[in-house]
Length: 276
Image (cartoon, rainbow, N blue to C red; front, side, top):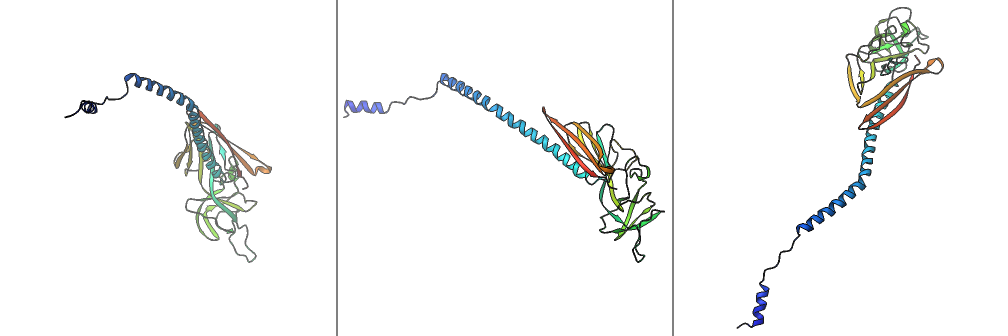
């Protein structure tokens, strides 16, 4: 028979436990506190994040502009002497791309041998003194180019330019041509094709492989083209000759790119050799 105390103990041990949890008021208070803390933290880190985003955007714009200017500078270093020309708006710069050059034989050697380049009449071949530059079908030979507006010494009009035919070192065969003037340094250049950099309608493009024409095309028709930069808000080319006898030319390029309220403007100068 159970005692009274044991009976009460058993009843107590089997009583149901009370469920514990949050009241609605407690939840509302916690949500309010978390919201206040979150707003404070967001306000604290907003400026650093915005600054980082702006810095990343400026870096991207600078990289795009710098890459485009480097490409233009590298190309201009291989321009045919005195072939750079800029249109009146300053939005287009054109030049004739060369793949190399060399020195032609001006007279026979002491034994009466060799094939000199004849300037007194039509000639179809000449010997190269020294290394023979690489040449392929479609290349053209230019001798003593003095640039646009110089008549027969302007490669754009063709007075001093003729097609390359074949090469059997050291002899180069060309389409029949009488070049108007000899080069003081006995130099010739191998021209591949014309190239134009154009800033138009907010983009910067490179055109190449189109026909060589006396008048500067703006923009060129035919050939190939590639997009170099978008979001171009300002772009300008200028060209000037410097030094004694204008033996050096300087192409100045200003390029500004804008995006989402950020703008980056870069300036670059490219020196070109104008010794014909």
